[in-house]
Length: 250
Image 1 (cartoon, rainbow, N blue to C red):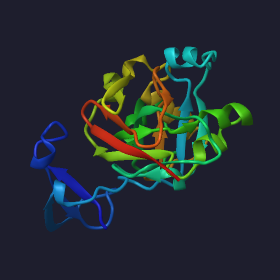
Image 2: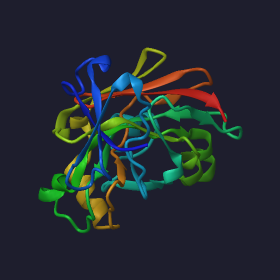
Image 3: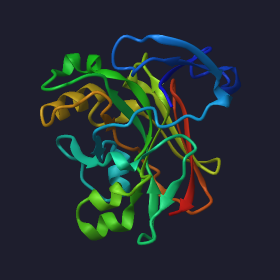
């Protein structure tokens, strides 16, 4: 198990055309290649990072807030997911037995690149290592019943991340698309966020210190809905790629 760099034409190249070049240590500093390389289809991709914490943003798209009957927050509405919720590409989302309504939430995810505290908005993008796809899986019935979100969003497997981290990307206006078994459920753009990426990073860093590898889920657009055992959820973000996960019983 090791970190690597995906090579061979970027995220728009065909999957079979890509290779993975192993790097020594971790990606949070100078990159040193080991010389080992594999064809991408021959490796198993794990979650691209295991954060100390995952910071989620609620109600960051107006249409999503409206579909759930919520008002728009005047400032970013933040919550936490545990690191134990993280799974990687093609891993299974496990349905808890005590929930009757588990929903997908496709999102752009940010990966923090260093120790970040009180960063000004104009320097916020420099604090990021890069970007990946995320799925803020939520037990909607538990969220409604509890009046807070820790249980509903904290189950094991409720934070798929991947397929990799794109380090060179402008997050201002990316197409975000989520489908379930090939049927489109979410189709939006990051330009429709209420609070944009620099604002989110700066705001959160004034609340808590961000550490290398921490993940910020930037909020989900309209179209969230339930998933059932046997289905597959795929989240695609322009310039990054597609994160697909099956749904299974726990």
